Image (cartoon, rainbow, N blue to C red; front, side, top):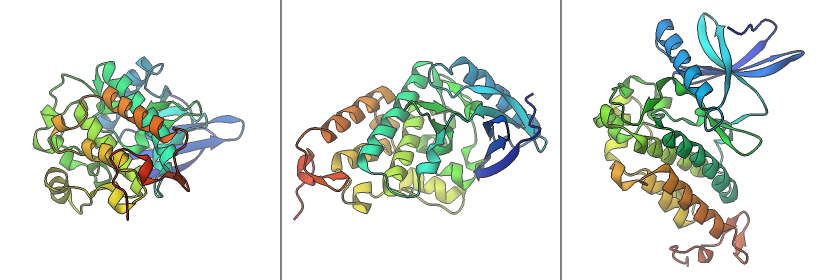
Length: 289
């Protein structure tokens, strides 16, 4: 267990998770993540699982944990704060398209590597995505990570509103049947939020969230922000498909689609409007009167 003597904390709560930044004079800064277990025992078990998975795959897609700490009687996982930017810190205002494509591609690459290693997160949230200075992404919140073929059920409707905002329809209907496509749905919510500065759905209680994810159709982000190219908006709407089979078949295929969009966006001669390409520069976008 790492000692926190001399550290001062600032914290933020997201659903069941608590994230703290720990700073101290002459000591390296840390990021501390509580895995959000309902009891002390459950939280300790989740932290132990996250430490195991994170340590095993830190050279690929997981942010490397440096150990366990205890804050207010609860265990948390500690990470070195090497100029990390959490993705949730970039939300709240619309991203320009170039920045979005860069961040979305890096996030998708990390998720694709996670799936290739045989793991599904099933609880991807913006605060679980650490953007590194080298433009790679480290994934955290790994206490509930499962294998691709796992049939363990988890009652997602017991989660908080912050967590319910990212739950896939199949996680509500048939929790044991959720797989890597559920992670892609969560990416769709996150990408929507990055570009539109709001989530596609809202809910007041678990039943409202369940209805939104299983029955309501989100407004295309380009409707809320017309300068979003239709090809980008369509990609996000595909990720939000109610049927998992209608989404991208893998994070790898999503990554390739993002690469094609980025290549088109950076193509010489594209007419620009501020930070955005004009509608005429994008295939599949009708000209505006």
